[in-house]
Image (cartoon, rainbow, N blue to C red; front, side, top):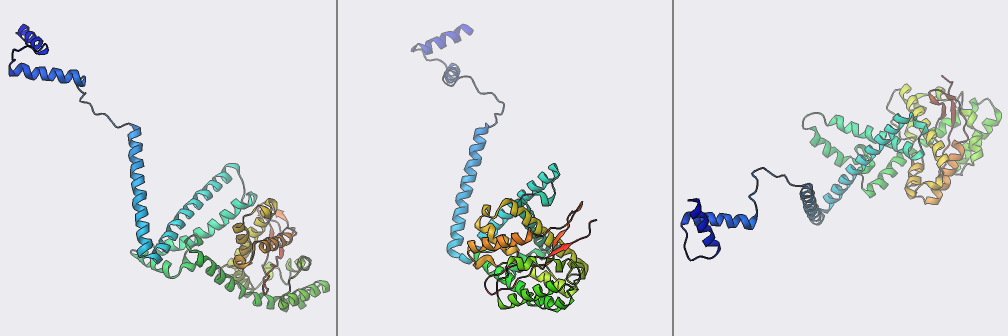
Length: 372
């Protein structure tokens, strides 16, 4: 039997005229397929290599980008106003996520190297300060979104009241200018009240020379004259104790100062005093870090942001004027020498005072706290 199979196979290979049976023909076809295609594949499952997986991911990402681009063009053509809000919202999410990662990196570095807040470089210190304020504002939205179906109402409120409920990352460029002007207008409303209080306490100042300097300064401010730096520094002793010390301020005075610093005035007196001390301490620490860095190292946007934080509406003022104003501010702030105790800086910038027709100068006042 085996010999006949061999003979039939040899005959088929050499082109013999003898026709094999169907059984032998089928086996010869299988042999030829084996010679042509090699050994039969194993029945085991073979996984795709990493290169195939990466190419598949790249393909999906590319297709997603194409679809996303078409969607953006569709929104831009048919719903232009909604498209502006949509793009601002997406960019805002990306910016706040980047801010969160940077803040986490800074906090981790502080924890590893045992660094305090006032020991940070200027940009890291400013980033943490602003990020804390943004998180506080977002936390309020998170709280009012907790009840069932309240998130739909929150979206409506964010659309109707973007200035009160959203941080700057979610403002359009036009809204940023308009809202900063509104905030500065609210801030300026408290300036006459602060000036009126300063005029009332002039007779209570015991030193005759300080009374004269205070009267001259108030007169210059009322006329819109730009006060000199030495005029402001000559009065710093007035604000260390009675009648203008931090502990001697009344509730109405602290509320006016809180509005001048864009802090909420609707708090009890002890909380208002605590917030004023904390806010002015942070500004003073930022001033010391900025003086170490140098104003020339700041970008135009950083200069304008620093001026606005300290009370100058820098949105409509040239960059060079902002740098000059900021230099005057640092000259006053860094001239204040306070005491130091283990809990940190005790020097306080007690109040910020702005009044001017076009050019605004801040009055930084020193407060000495008893060391703990």
